[in-house]
Length: 331
Image (cartoon, rainbow, N blue to C red; front, side, top):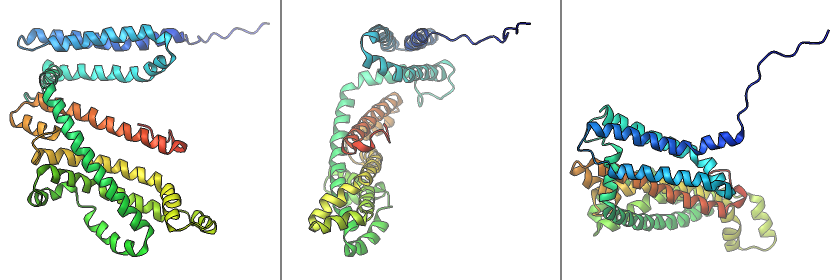
């Protein structure tokens, strides 16, 4: 008697090409959904400005469809879209949910939580002031961060290499370092002749502590075998510091640079909001004073893009310097 065939139904496997096209069309579909939801809400809100919002999502739909058609001619574009398209789709869906919560159901109080169209209008109307504020924040951030990194590297190398300096430097580091840099704002405003100088000094102080701690830790934990081999080959103190200890401490140094960069962002915004008359922190404080919360959210979006870009650049530098660690930490 012949064995009966297996009657268990097999799963239908969708062709990979159909799955890819469904993924590629997710962005224009989500943009069309967000556009339709906003158009429905706009019918109940005649005073709502929708031109810029509609134009933005029409451009998103057009560009996404064009990229979906061009992806077959470029493997790099195809790989980038496969990685980024789900993120873009989720971002558009979140904007749509934001529109529904704020303007659709009024679940959040106005004017503290404006809709995405109001934030977009603020971005467009205040684009010159926002660009100028971003430039001033960049100059101030880089000035303070550079000073903090230089000071942190010098003090970290000295504390990590020299026992006498470590004896006197570590207690000072443990007392002054944990104090938030923003706590020094009242004293800095009194001592410094300029708000910009005091803000740059506060950012440098916020960066100095983690860079010093991680650099000194990396220098002091250099393997004794590396130093012994170099001494056997006739290396002097300068060679041991700059060609053995510092290269061995570079992974720790980059961790300190990342921690200092995060601290500098916080110090920058707080310092600008209380003293400096320009920059993104000043813009947020100014817009909040006039109850222009659409401008506040616009500045927050600029800050997110601004800080993320700087962090990405630092990660690229890290990957170049530590090519053997590339891929361990991604950004």
